[in-house]
Image (cartoon, rainbow, N blue to C red; front, side, top):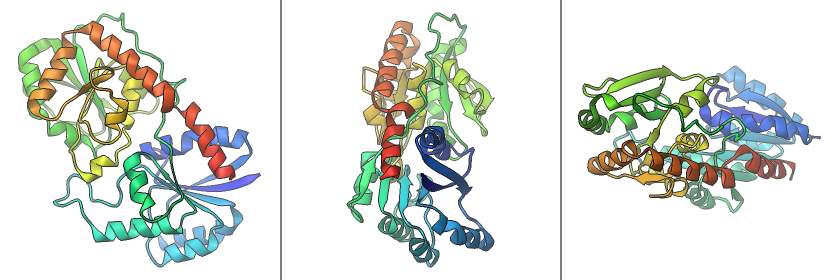
Length: 328
């Protein structure tokens, strides 16, 4: 039996849940014994991790990077290292003055070089990792399709719901388009609403904002209540590394998407087929308006998006790839 130590940021962190935790039942059913630990924070926790490393055949590290000198100690003690990457951690995020950081690039390079295999969530991240190692495979972020059932398109609602799901670290992307939401509200008045599923919110003057505190137990039902899913981003290096979880969730329940066409967004959202691309305020207003006014188009695009997810972005498809990698 293969014994794997899994290091994560936290059990409630979306990347941890969708990149590795959801696969554990399948892995254990197929002979991979998994032990989950949160990434060390204190010196005592680093020491405890160092002592147990030799007990495992492989250490799976999700996203985080070790500081020097622990990185070299980690490499000496760990038998095999698999580094999973689903964000452009070699850059600063979109709120920084400049995306470029020598420190981040150096730490990223160090983590990749000590790893036996790197798993990249998209082609941009794969290309970045290949600069430091040839041992890179691409496994996209995936959703458990049996949990994400299609929404009921026959349900009659008083308003068209534009929806966004995410955490407080990403809500600035949505707020940057406040002018879009205000314009949509003025144009359609009480026919539309903006639904935010998060733990942080903002208000608009011209459109009602429905604020839903995120919960793992209710997130799928809340997503099925959305009529149009949105994923605005900034076209910068940080966003190029995004793996599109929001879009996977929207499409998983059959909701059409309007998004900024960067990173995985371009792969999942087929413009004019599963949703629309939008790059400026006028396009955002135009594309959202098209979907507000055409319920048939919303259903058609939503079902097409679901098919894209079923073909390559499900847990059921990618758990086999991860199992084979860890067993090898």
